[in-house]
Length: 68
Image 1 (cartoon, helix red, strand yellow):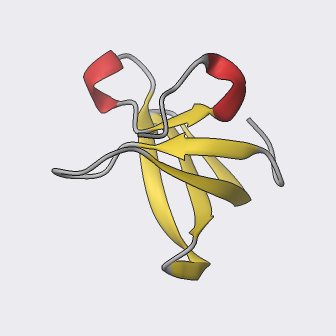
Image 2 (cartoon, rainbow, N blue to C red; image 1 turned 60 degrees about the vertical axis):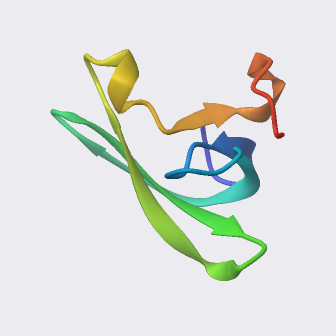
């Protein structure tokens, strides 16, 4: 995923939320994404672990991720 991509974000205890990637930072353990959400237009950082599906919080919107 890259800057300006629309994504689906998994959050604690609620439905997935739709946002837009503002920045991407790559680390050896995974990738951090700064994502603008309706409630947080300046962005919130989320980390996707490289080797764990359980650690994946951000997915491309067109991947079939459900927004509801």
